[in-house]
Structure formats: C-alpha cells, structure tokens
Length: 437
Image 1 (cartoon, rainbow, N blue to C red):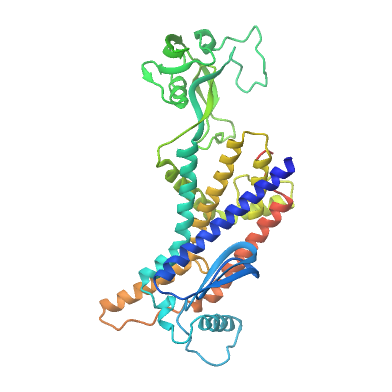
Image 2 (image 1 turned 180 degrees about the horizontal axis):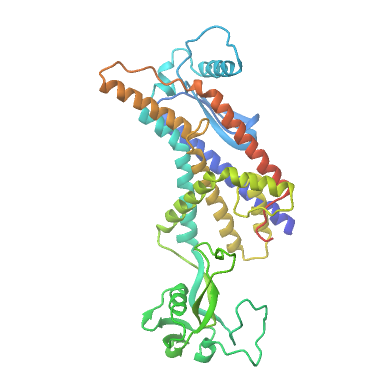
C-alpha cells in the first residue's frame, strides 16, 4: 500500500507539472493567435513525437520528454538577408538559426510573423507564459490559505506541562525537584480556550505566546472559556533562557560560535493545531514571498550547485532547501503521499509543492537571457528603445533587431541549463533530499 501511495504521489506531481507546462504554453498561444501570428505547433515535451493532431493551421501534441514545452510561431526574427556559406562554428550556428527561422515564414504570410508585431504585443505574448504560472501559483496558494487554511496554533489549550525542565535537557519526565510549570500552578487545563491575557483579547496562540515571552516573573490575569463559562486565572510566567532564532527559525550564534540566548517568559502549555482560514489576499502574499525566495536562490545558484556537487561526491549532507530537479520534486511528492498522516495534511503539502513549482517556473523564465522568455522580452524592449530613439532624432525606423546574432550566447546558456539539470537529476537519483530524514 505504501508503494502504491508513493507512486500515486509521483503521478500527481507529474500531472500537475504537465498541467503547469501546458498552461504556460497556452499563455503564449492565446495572445499570439489573438494578435494574428501564425502558430505552427503547440507541443508539451521535447524529443520524439508521441501523439499529435492538427486543428486548423496549428499542430497540437505531446513529445517523449516532459521537461518543458513550446509553441512554434512564424518569424520569431526578421528573415535573413545574408547569402553564401557560413564559416566558423558561431557563424554556422547563426546561419542555421536564420535558416530555421526563415522556414517558419509561410509564403505570402510574412505579415503574420511575430517580429512584425508592435513591441507591446511581443512583450505580451512572451509574458503570457510566465504570468500564467504566476496566476496558477497564486490560485493554488489562495486555495491553501483561504480555502483549506494554514496550520497554526489555535486559542484552545492542548496540553499543560507539569513542571519546568532545564533548557537543553534531554529529560522527559518530571521529578520531585523540578519546579511546577506556571500554567499548571495557575489551574489552566487542556480544553480551555484563551479569551484574554492581561486585558488583551487573544485571537491566535501567537498573540498569547508574545505576551507571555515579554512578561517573565510578572503576574498576568488570564481569562479562559471552560465548558461555556469564563474563568479568570492568575498566571506568572517564569524567566527561562532560550536560544535566539531568526525569522526562519534557525538558531543564532555569536562571533565565538556560542549560541545567543535571551531571557523570556515561560508558562508551560501548548495549543491545539488546526487549519485556520486566512484573508483572501494571503495566497497572493505567499506567492510573492515564494517568488522572492526563488529569486534569492537563483542569485546564489552557482554556490548552491557547487554544494550539490560536493554532497554528491562526498559524505556531506545536501541542503534540504536547495535546488531540485523534476525527479527530486517527484520523490518528495511520493514521500508525502506515502506518509502516515491525515489525507488533508498530505494534500496540503502536495499543493504547496505544486504552487512553489509554478512560482519557480515564473521566476526562472523571467531571467533576461535567451532562450528563456525573459530574453525574448529584453530583445523586444531593446527594439522598442531603438525605434523610440530614432523617432526622437527624426530618423527612419531602424530594421528589427536580429536576435539570431545572439545564438552563440543562447547556445552557451542552453548548455549551462542542460549541465545544471543533469547535475540535479543525478543528485536526486543517487543523493536525494528527504523531507523525513
């Protein structure tokens, strides 16, 4: 059964990835057709064709390697004017790209070429794909946050400690020498619902935790709802040394490598955890926070890839927050599906993975390098700048930008992307990241 669930998790992620890729390409296809561009192919995947069917002038289909997709538009670049045999590797690459581009321009339909569109229309066509992934990511995170809810501590007490254990202790049971926990002394019981602390209404468990942390050795008036009746209790949090953590929960250390601690209030009770529905805009906030995290990862990608390589060939552990290939994401999805957890919890994690995947596709495709969408957008904008400058100077409009001249750089970027993908793929096969250790 566990194996079947593992495979099911992988299949769910593959279907989600295929849907994300398909919608990405639809984001390009729809505006291209609306603007009159001739689209010859709409394909999901690369490599050998598995299935296809032609509707009108466009062939729709699937290819063997589900690692992306593409649409083939007529005249992505201006038709070539150079003749004769190309000499040199780079010139040959440029000439081959021009020849392939020329073949997409049907006789008598040059006006329907992509490069003939106004700059703003070209930008919209190329933005369509990444924006589709962004919208899909926002939708998924909105379903998570506002439909299902985020897992967080509620105002209902789940447990009350009997005593205060020393910080850093491995002790699991109270002894006669251990001081009683303030919550137990105050008479707080599991099932009590926090109403207010020191006159401050409590909406979430985080509200209560903040007040208690800031009030060591201070007596607080705590109002709880117990079996439908409100009771007022007196709680005096004890002062306890706790290690300082950052916003991500990582422990902080000083210049000598010693843990940084601070004195905080401790009461000794825990909250029930539940899915709490959030305001409708929370999903959008989560999506853009994820986009910022992905952008930060891309900035440090060379270092992170080096760490992946080191972990692959040594005994070093991989960073669980580092980059993954499709295989790595699939393995995580399988692990989640096979865990012994409530179905809703597993579904939440899978949706989180899928939402993060779409945001990653959005950010990655916006990198301003060909052959990525961001590179095509930069080419279109540069063409617009040249035309605007010519108008300001009263000069005729210049010829459209011939991006085939950038083919050598495009090849270098493609090789780097392939090498990066190969490294991550091998690492995810032989040194995979696990959510559960």
